[in-house]
Figure 1: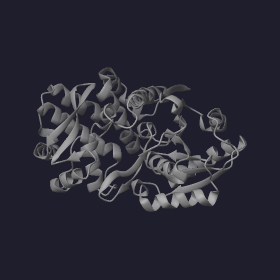
Figure 2: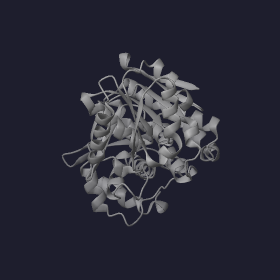
Figure 3: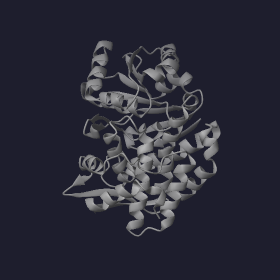
Amino acid sequence: MRELTVNLGDRSYPICIGQGLIRRAGELFAEKAISRKSPLLIVTDENVADRWLEPLAAALEASGYAAARFIVPAGEKSKSLDMFQNVITACLEAGLDRKSAIVALGGGVVGDLAGYAAASYMRGIRFVQVPTTILAHDSSVGGKVAVNHPLAKNIIGAFHQPELVLYDLDTLLTLPPREVSSGLAEVVKHGLIRDAGFVEWIVGHAGQLLALEPDVLGHALYKGCSVKAEVVSRDERENGLRAILNLGHTIGHALEAVAGYDELRHGEAISIGMIGSAMLGVELGAPLEVYETTKRALESVGLPVALPEHYDTDAVMEAMMHDKKFGEGRMTFIVPTAVGTVEIRNGIEAGMVRAIVERLKREERWT
């Protein structure tokens, strides 16, 4: 088992990465002093439930925990206020109290939804992240929890740190290829913002990553989580440095909203967004290598690098206007200055961003 720590003083917590960890859940929960006297609620989705809900519940119950279950529909549309209310109802029906914990078993949607419920129920109770997708190596770390509004992604949320991130690599072995590629977008992102050598390592091991070879995948997730943990430890509530983790997300979140959180996977939208950010970086003075390496790394793991032409530019721009980083007709973007280095650029004019969106539709001809 690989282990690292998000250092937040009294609220520090471990990230455990390895195979067979769900079977050890009771032991690992007890090490974090999660109460056996108060009931738990496991929140998962219908896809994950078929394979992992009962093994997790059984492991917890064998260690003396009482675990209620709540299953939501799979997909981004479950990150809604209606589903949030349903989770709160499940908490009440299961008798959760102030010493209870909510356990998020699933990908980013489940983690965000369950985490926001934990942040809100009785003004905040404990929760544990048990991610089951590659993408969730990013979303499960750092305490950002949220649900979507029809006009904007993650606009309703909170900062609420987990007690533990329990990352069992066995849960990844049945992911479909598209979900694997989507998840690797955030792995690539962590390299692009912090570690140029890691980006080259990803390109060199792309085939093994796509084949889900445990040792290679475990190393990649450890490296990605290490970047996230280091940044969050220095800036928990995104007052400055943590914003660099949003590379590709300003455009990417807008694309998701325009697509109705359906057509594009999160990682696919962020991949296109990172290409847009690389284009913007070159426009602002970064070497062309930034764009070329970004494109090569994303393509190596099967991700899209162009915006489908049917996306309306006006709709994409309007969605970006609802972004939390927009104000006074200007935008804040995370812009690469070199491979492995980014900066926060304020005051980017909307007209420049519009030109980038248009270029993304003819990306294959852009240099």
